[in-house]
Image (cartoon, rainbow over all chains, first blue to last red; front, top):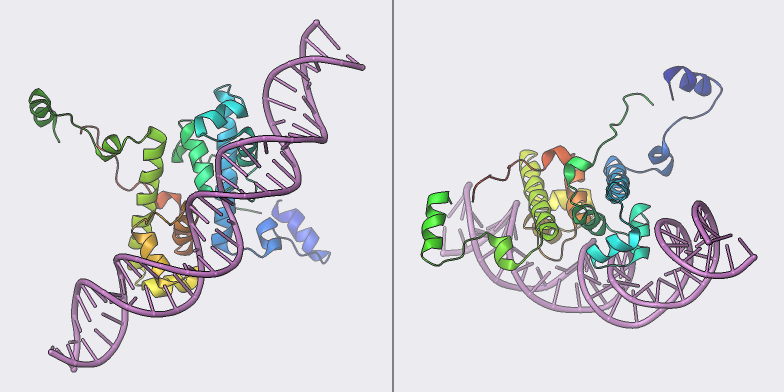
Length: 106
Length: 106
DNA sequence: TTCTAATATGTCGCATCCGACATACAGTGA
DNA sequence: TCACTGTATGTCGGATGCGACATATTAGAA
């Protein structure tokens, strides 16, 4: 959202923010959520690049297809531990995260 | 360990490796351990830079002093989730990891 | 030394996360 | 249409991680 549009909305009485704002997350909480999402995307991207099915990745991980599906949507019952295990199992690392940089403006 | 020393040991019948090798960790498992250690060091470093006690950091985290102590030694019963929460609570991020680069030679 | 603050270690009961499994859904080719 | 492959969703019992608390150890100041 650019400044102009935001300004227009606020002039019309709307309060404008992002999802974290809406949910009342602290900065630290937002960072944690962002990290989870980055991880889930990296896993999906790397898996698809390597032409693996979720089932095949599950085998590498010693887990099940359904867990991999949950990893890739960053489901609530998937921990950072499991997300990172997925990343590393695909040969990924920290450089595979943070592909998309947060924009300066809303 | 330089190549010369390693060569001498191997010539004498020793097998030479690192801790991960000794423990029989896969690459992915080693990466996970390395990440945990990097996180624990980053938390301690940032906390000390900010002149906070473990108790004070615990308050920020909504946790207890003993948990913070365990974070900082990457104790086995501390998850990546808690390690990252510690990092983020101190205003840290991914750039605060990986300060020390893995050496090319053993 | 004694007192005190900071950190470390151990344990508890409860909550969350795990793999496993069943099953539903989506896409594709016969 | 049916059959098949890949992905998504929901649930289970057992394992692991959590905050809390007690207590030990360390370090420094009086």
